[in-house]
Image (cartoon, rainbow, N blue to C red):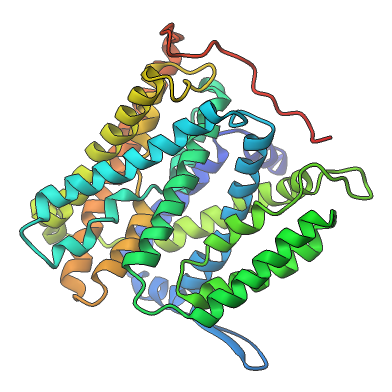
Length: 410
């Protein structure tokens, strides 16, 4: 009976969001209780992998963030590729909207942060912290609403987050990478070219792609660039139009295999490992100092202003179209939800302030937590109210509602 109820729960659209929230709460309980030392020991547990001269020795936390999240980005890349080729992002006007929104969602939050911190050269190193969107939590919160929001909004959020995270990876590579391994980048380029060649030669089995993709991941990891980029690059080389021996599209088959593993295993583990932030009275009191205030306002205000304004201008100018079945209020609610920076912001913050000591690292975390929390709660509320109203935009800039096309690749 209990197993049946569990199975029913996991089949609900909001299950992923609930699991992420539970994992985040458990992490905060652990780090703010006598279990804190054990929590830290677990995340800092050294995990070593070596084959001949190749050795990867990292703590468990980095294996989760660099390894498991590469699998997550692989799944996201597969979904976005499918939508670009067959679904809701298959026309230039449709793909333009998330691209433009991502630009606004990075530029405006960074400017907000700079406004509060331009007088402090050291604090200015954190300008990119509020420019990030935590796709895992944003999608999880959106999933809590289930079918109340149109599928096109989820597709839009996934595409926007991919562009946003790719932008964040570029920022990390350009501004927060002290040393880059040219040899690793060259070798990684060779493996990427191998994947593209396999696609051109109509290799239908996913096994060879995953093997070469693992080698690509190692090269990206060793190059100094964020390793999750390898997952996206691999996804874009998986064939959609071919069929394997069982008559399945390799892309759709791999997407189906990864879906439950990512949603119910990888994402909760990721949330538990990264949401453990110590809360203290002194941290709460420092919320209105320039660094945390700039981050909080960048995430909560800058993100929604940047994403929604750029979307509004693009749609009104005819550059892009409103997501099918969505209205302006829903688009605004989604713009607020993009202010959930959380784990990606924490990661960028650790890179920005790692050489400046714990004083800077401690202050940025409370700003990230506050801005992400406000964005999650307010974004969810706006989306829920706008979805319940049943009012859809009739603006000339909006495209008429249509049923998303999701045919199996032929």
